[in-house]
Amino acid sequence: YVDHAKACAAALSRGGAALVIGGSGLFDEEAFAALQQLEAATGCALVVQNNFSRCDRGGTRPRFRRVPYFPAAAKAFFASYKAVVCVGCKPPVAMFGYEDNISRVVDNALELDAMDVVGALNYLAKHVVPGAPAAQVPPMARGDM
Image 1 (spheres, helix red, strand yellow):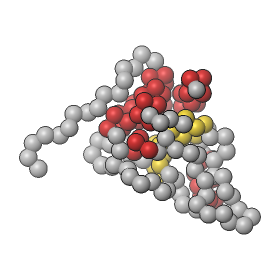
Image 2 (cartoon, rainbow, N blue to C red; image 1 turned 60 degrees about the horizontal axis):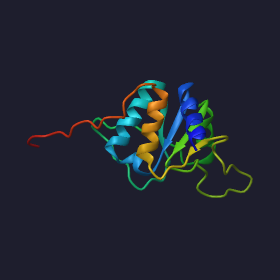
Image 3 (tube, helix red, strand yellow; image 1 turned 120 degrees about the vertical axis):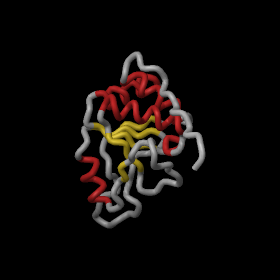
Image 4 (cartoon, rainbow, N blue to C red; image 1 turned 90 degrees about the vertical axis):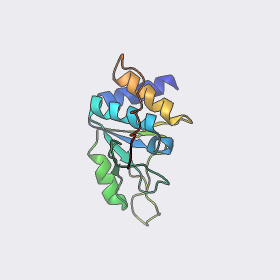
C-alpha cells in the first residue's frame, strides 16, 4: 500500500495530473487544506465525479472541475491529463452502458483506496512537497453575519 501511495504522489509530482476526489475529501476542511497544498505544489486539477452526494463549495474552499456527463466528452476530458489519481473514489466510468460506446472513461488511473481520505490526502501532500507539515485547517470566520 505504501509503495502504491508513493507511486500516486510521484504521478502528481510530475505535473499535468488530475486528482479525482471522493468521500470526505469533498466536505472536510482538513482535506481542503491538503488539496490546496497539492494543487499549489503540482498544478494538478482537482476533479469530482458527476454524481457526488455532497460537496462543500465557496469561500476559500478549492474549486473543483466536474467530469463531463457523456462518455465521449469525459474520455476527452481525461485525455488531456498525463496522469489520473483517484482518492476516496473509484475511477470514473460512463453512467449507462451504451451499445458500441465507451464505458471506461479513464485508462490507467491510479486509485488510492483509503478509508481515511483526509489521511491519504495529507500523506500525498507530505510526499509531494517534502518537509511540508500536515495541512492546517484555516480558522473559521467569526463575527456578525
